[in-house]
Amino acid sequence: MTTLKMSISAAGIAIAMSIAGIASAHSFPESETPSAGQQVAAAPSEITINFDAPIEKLFAKLEVTGADGRNEAAGQPQISGDGRHMSVKIATLKPGDYTVKWAVVGIDTHHTEGSYTFSVSNGG
Image (cartoon, rainbow, N blue to C red; front, side, top):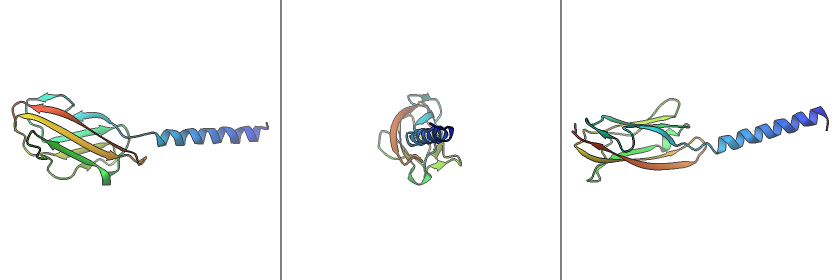
């Protein structure tokens, strides 16, 4: 095989591997505030989720529900400029358990979703 053919083959393999890496880069949470399972003394004013890959603003969903099932989110989720941080302001929470439900579409077009709970011990 000539040097030119070997270079073209190596470049083709490198491109294919980088495309495969991008295609498998789903967006999953790296951290949350408050975090999963956390008991906070004072009610937070905002919920934040940090993702390991950028998400699409148009398809982002974030809600916070208490035992009564009412969504405590005050407005639509906000997405940071780099697409890796999603947050939503929330109403003043009473003491109790809350469930955070999220759903996003990564820039790779893959949908991911999940939920976690946290507790407020003293309310707002």
